[in-house]
Each structure stands twice: as structure tokens, then as C-alpha cells.
Length: 325
Length: 245
Ligand SMILES: Nc1ncnc2c1ncn2[C@@H]1O[C@H](COP(=O)(O)OP(=O)(O)O)[C@@H](O)[C@H]1O
Ligand SMILES: [Mg+2]
Image 1: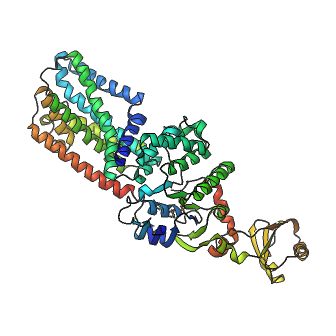
Image 2: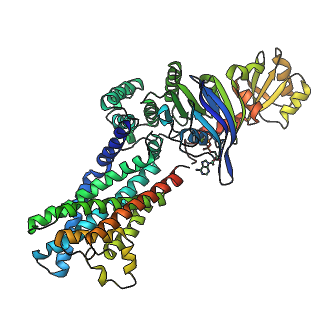
Image 3: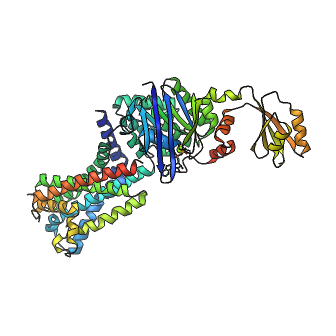
């Protein structure tokens, strides 16, 4: 009974697509668990399976010890759900939306009205309480949607890409609110395709790719192999074929990786001297525009474990939220 | 208790957000008036035929007030994905669907009494079996709302919901004996009439309002109740199959 969420052999396909292909994991009570993977990895489908919006083809789900596989409704009063799209009622005001969501969880009028006022305050929406949801900005919609997810003080909260597609300031505020909820003892299951977000917020992270979990561990353990590693990122004016390979051949102790057009990341287990590297580039007719020391990050681990280039994950940020069903 | 708070608030929210909006209210007033006028002009009849027309006008007021309203609002909530909130709420699916249907039923019942009030101003409505009329109105509203639910689970766009509702309800105006007795329809169409719940509702209304039913009242009510139950169970199954992936 220590686990808030317990998933065994969970699988779901849509026609030919194995959206979730047999995953196992456990989220402990009070933990902030991250589900990190690119678009289409199966994150939303997993949340739908856990919350009762979709029926699994195989496997079992336990929420706070309650077996949800047979009866998706069984544990719904314990869960708060923030979907990947802000899906409140456009024609209702912010205040009415929250009150209505409280009522859906059976909160008596006085209680839900007090809680609504409290949440509007916390989420910086008190001034917009009387405006229709349809007239809110993207960031405000997102915040109200999160508020609606916690109106009934659920012990377990599901957050599906809470900061995707909104402005930087709102995203930062939302991360702060999530961290606050976690400190307050709420168990949180968070999906994201922002590596830094997962690294910053989560205690443990599962990497999910193409419906499978490829690695689950604490952020510290995931980062462990990177301890003492140095990394420098060079911005080069120009391009050369097989630059990374050539560099590895010339400096066997170094690791090199193209991280973007004209950007090469060089990592080493020992102190790095820049001089020989600059000469190496200049010999190939490449001027070094910038050399920047970078902190090894979860991104490096993710790239190594999943084989997915950081660039591809980054490109997905540009996509509007919830564009693909 | 908690479940009833949810049930009640879903119903009230739908009433406030959709049904009691000015365009819908004015529609509920203009629609029966327009139909009544059309019949007076066409038949050249006097005020004495108000009572003859009343059951039919009540029937279409309910049909047009509920079916597409429920179909459209449900499809709208499905598209905007706010419907997922209801599916995720800890209330049984049966009760959730009853709450959604309930709003449309109340709206349909209210619509049915608009022509009644209008008729009462124009003609003497003495001798109407009000109890039977009210029961028939409620059952017609429930079956029409369930038809809207059936439409909603079959489509995914709002305009499809509108079109598909019309596909049902326009033929029903003529097939169900609202204005022309079913016996006057071509023999080929008559079985179709008896496969539609509104035929029994119209018959019950004709009986209650002017003593001119053609089937025994118990058969009307039994058939209506059976249709409602069947439609509800089929719709529930469809919702489970199509809306919970
Ligand atoms: N309702 C659906 N019908 C068909 N395919 C779906 C459906 N939902 C998801 N998929 C597919 O399942 C895979 C996983 O999708 P999803 O769980 O939404 O990924 P993520 O949330 O990680 O971006 C994708 O290939 C997606 O196209
Ligand atoms: Mg998703």
C-alpha cells in the first residue's frame, strides 16, 4: 500500500499503432514522477489509461491500492487530472468553471466557493475571475485548468505537458506552483517533452519512447555517470563533413557530438584544453565563433539512453500544443 | 449525496449555459407560433381547430427543442474536450448521461407548454386530461432527447450533429401522426411510423387533449416507456464503446 500508482504490463494499441507497449512502473506516495518522451511516445495514452478515459488491452493499474483495470471509475475521486489541452467551458467565467469542477467532485456549495476564491488568488487569476474562459490568454487558460485539476484537493495529480505551448513567464510560474504542490505532499505524475523541466522538477524520471519505458531512475542516479565530466560547446562559422568523427580520431580521449548546425559539443572525463581544439578547427578552415562551457545535463543522458537527438526534442517545442490528436 | 451534487450541477450548468440562452427561448416561442399560423393559412380553418392542431404543435415543439439541442451541445463538448471532465468525474456513467439528458428533457417540456398557453388564450381547453397529457409530454421529451444522444454518439462535428438530427426529425413530423393520421399514409410507410416512438407520443397527446387517440392509451405509454428504456441502454453502450477509448 506504499505505492500511489502501480502499473504492470500496461498495453494499448490503436489499430496498428502500439501506443503503449507493455510498461511497468511505480510511483510512491508523495513523489513527483516524470514521464519524459518525444511527441507520440505514448504519454497521453498512459495518462488516459491510468485515469479511466481509455481501457487497457492488457496489464493492471492500481491507484492507492485500488484495482482500476476492471472499473475505471473506482479511484477517480482520488485523482486530479490536468489534460494536455486547456479544456474548460469557454462560455463560463473562470469562477463558474472552478465552482462547477468542484461540484463534479461532490463538494458542497460553500466549500467549493471558498476553495475557488483561494485558488483564483494562488494562481493570480482573481482579477479575471468574472471573465469568460474563452477570453483568457493561453497562459491564463493553462493556469485555470491546473486550478480546476486540484479544486478537490486530490492526493494524486496527473499533469499532461503542463507548460507546453505557453509563454516563458507563465511556464515558470506554473513550475513554481507544481513544486509547491509537491512540497505540500501531493503525489504528482507529470509528462513532458522538456528535458530541463523534468530535470528541474522531478524526483524520478521514466524515459518513454515509442510506447516503451527505456529507463527509470532518480535524477541523481541518471546524472551519476556524468559526474566530473566536462563539456564545451563550439559554435563554428562554416561546416565540415564528418567533423565529429575526425575529432574523435584526432583526440581519442574526447567525445564529440554535433548538436545543431555549426554546433559541436566536446566532452571529456579530464580537464579540457581548448587550444589544440581551436587549431584543429582552424586547420579545417572553420573559424571558432564561440566556445562555451556547458554543464552536463539530463539531456546528455537522455540522448545516450534513448538515441533520440536533443535537436529533435527541441524542434517539438515549436509545434503548437495538442495539434495532433 | 456527493453524486447528487454533481448530477444537479451538471443539469443546472447545461440549463444556464445552453438552454436558457435568449436565442433558444425565442426559438421556443416563435417556432410553435409559426407552425400554427402555417396550418391556419393553409387550411383556412377558424379558431375552433386550435385544439385539433395543439397535440401536433406540442409534439414538434418538443422534438425540435430537444433532439438537436442535446446532439449539438454534446458534440460541442466532445469537440472542446470539456466532456472528458465529466467522464473523469467520480460519478457513474448512467447518472452522468441522465443529467445531460435531463437538461434537454426539461427544456423540451417547457417548450411543449408554450403552445398550450397560446392555445388557452384562443380556445376553451376544458376537458383535457392534463395528467395524461403531462405524462405523454415527458415521455416524448425523454425519447426525443435520447434520439439526440444517439445522434451525438454517431457524429464528431457540430454541423454533422445538426444535419443528422434533421435527417431524423423532419420525416418524423410527417410519419408520426402529429398532423395527419398514420392511416392516411401510404401502406408502405405505416410500419415505419410504428417503429418511431413519437407515433405513440402523438397518439397519447391526441387522446389526452381531444379524445381522439387511435391506440389504447396503455399501449401508447407502454410503447413509449419501452422505447425510452431501449434507447437509453443502447446509447449507454455506445457511449462506453465510443467515448471511452
Ligand atoms: N485515439 C487514437 N486513435 C489512434 N491513434 C492514437 C490515438 N491516441 C493516440 N494515438 C497514437 O498513439 C501514439 C501515442 O500517442 P500519445 O499517447 O498521444 O503520445 P504523447 O502524449 O506521448 O505525445 C501516437 O502514435 C498516436 O498517434
Ligand atoms: Mg500527449
